[in-house]
Length: 509
Ligand SMILES: Nc1ncnc2c1ncn2[C@@H]1O[C@H](COP(=O)(O)OP(=O)(O)OP(=O)(O)O)[C@@H](O)[C@H]1O
Ligand SMILES: [Mg+2]
Image (cartoon, rainbow, N blue to C red):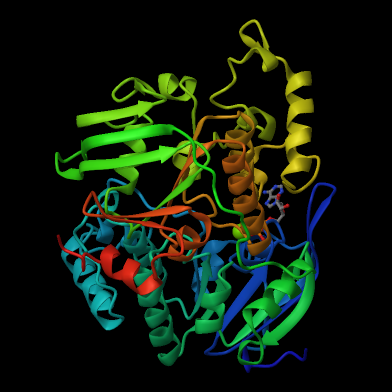
């Protein structure tokens, strides 16, 4: 592609190596001005790495970058911001106990005459931005108190506050509810209309179809071409990305449920502020079935999972696993009673980032005989075990057992958690947003794994904000609204519209 000022960003022949591993192998990217440009590729393909180079977090080993036709050398994020590039990372980088405004101005504080921080003026500027782009965020709320979707808008605001003209969004919708996705697409449209250019990394083909003009495809560090989205389809994009046809529909046989294995009765759970988030909730999951909970984020899902895992206190009611009450015991007791979990926030609950992959692969189970030598881990056994997982679950790159888990791509970190949960043969598996951040090939694999576990007799509780996922994978669907189950259906007996209505509180009882 010729270098031209028609393009906001051009990256040509980019090579990036991590030690002996080549993460990017002569990648090209040409992003037209004032468009939404998607980057699509499997977990570990190199998408985030490429954007980290554009944002100055990494230096390319080879290749050139041009902004509006001019060659640039971006040494660090400060340099990127100066040139009008903003980035919202896959994992947010906000300070939890700061307010929205404080987070937005952090590192870029407006100072008054005496060099004193002028919060009043900062707040005004933030409010102006919020209104201009229709963000619907409270500038005074604390990050810890707002939804993930709002936190993300704060990240975008932060970039705009610094004058971003080119905005990189790394998997912005992985954590959003359908409504928040609509809102984000609206915001992106508005930004493009006002002259901004957006590069979006996403695994959601539907959203690429809805929001992007062009889509560049990366496969294992190599550039596979750019397509005009209006001339493409979800199946076409999936096939180009994975290099084979992907089955976007879940295939499964009917369930053969046995006895009730997880039984929740009249469960009430409060959040930190003492507000009831789960209210007298009743739910049974039998061995050999998948019960899916459909609902919008913030309707008690995380409190429910926390209560099951004894990470939150059950104010009232019981949680039984195989007939034994486990509420208000300890996570250890719950795990020992046969419950495994795929947590929704892998960094908070799922992984210890400074540890290597194999250590993470046995987290929660490090006391087990198989890996233990007294109180020590037996690293030889551990390595053998992890090698097996890495190959079985196609965790990339192959041979990553001894690497720090923080060096793995987001999707591959998620695969480590799933491998760990599933292979420790639980009776109950709590899958909370199990495919968050995964590529379509990996999603296909996780869904197959869940169904295989079901067929082995595991009782599976699937909690997901993706309505499609709940509808496709579950044998029974329960809708949660304001901490209560407001409807229960056998799979296939209910449509998306009816569920959507219940999820939004439209079925008021
Ligand atoms: N700092 C690092 N050190 C070592 N290896 C790294 C580092 N950063 C990335 N890699 C490797 O480079 C490859 C590309 O990773 P990257 O995070 O760019 O993937 P991705 O396409 O964003 O995947 P995902 O969809 O899972 O987020 C992966 O194999 C990853 O393990
Ligand atoms: Mg990534």
